[in-house]
Image (cartoon, rainbow over all chains, first blue to last red; front, side):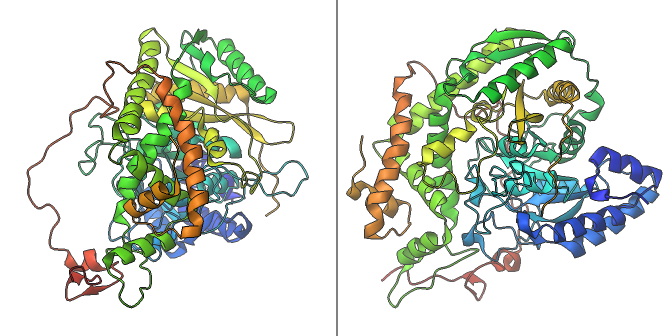
Length: 496
Length: 95
């Protein structure tokens, strides 16, 4: 009998399951115990042990028959943004209190079809709006990592903070995340795990609570690059229910992990060297560059001239789309409805319901979106931002056309910061967390965060690789080479 | 461009979010911080640039305009805060 089954990677668990060394029921019980003992992290917010046990038994039966897919029997955590049939799915918002979907998101259905097991739903920033998991109606998620012996609670990042914390703390083998401006990659970097946002259109958005539809993509958050390759393959694929879902074949991503990147051309964009960037981030980036060079890649300096305008463009486009998407939370069809006073009509019902049900950050973004779309400002803000988005995408197209295979950048401008540390900062300071990741969403490209080092305080730091559209296989292989060279194996010391 | 209290109140109204009178000054200040950040976009030369409509160059698929998953009234109403006789129920809309 193997010990610490919850600490396994997907690939090791798959191999052990196929050999008969372990059952999915055993794996699942180990994870359920780990979840039960990790209340202090506040990562899991709706546990589904009965469902998990039933799915694990079914997976074991399927494995026994042979020919089970790689994800069969693998216990996962699912971000609360995914609609899961009969299980609370409320995007960490009070306004969806009590909502139990009658349907299953395509991504979770794909995972279940592959035999995956759901342990429960994971905490996140409300409607995926946030970079520190401090906007959730369930309360903050705590990062399992600490600054040495300092007991101060740190953020796991956001918005997929529950996913990141759960994977880093070995509560599950892997988790789903979603990424609109960096919400998979920033928390992955803050917790020393791997997370990939695929090309826009790879994963169906159907059944995922919408934030900004032209930017949202789901992806896996895992312990290794290989696990990301395996799980991404199970999540994506064409879906007629999402009109932006790409009708192109999904390659075997894992089979593309050779670790050979000889002759690949890696771009280092000069615009990502920000003023005031901590020297440790600077050094991590230089180290990563050297690792890829030593692995046989050619390193080339490149320019992405419109990088500076990505965050401001994002903070027009994302709130604009959010204001439209979140108009559906009106107290009529699902979730919370405010108690009304005598004589209140339907307008009061909308206004009170939304004031009570939506948190501060969400309200702010909905109103900013309303403003930039309002008569008189639509051209000045929204249309201008969409034109700048065209230019940001063109920057990437030009470097790829010039022969660049992938681009290496830091994943975040800092290591994980303390919960509450940014409370008094203005909202723009928090938005700067996504400065290296948001360009990738605006250009619709695949991006992956790989843990690559530890800072002086003992916290993990991540690097980001950006790939060509639809070339996740090649991107994952470059990430695999980086992972092997970096040799990141550190784990947070268990205190929870 | 600076947002005054009247504009902040108008935006809240358009967004159908009740904001108390005494919360408006702080809200207006936050709007101004964010809009100040967004103002940078004015520096970019966007002459002749098309606004992006789709990040991946693909034509949206079409399908027959027919009912695909109909006849699920119970399921559709199952999460409603107030449903009566097969309908969503809301406060009086027309005086």
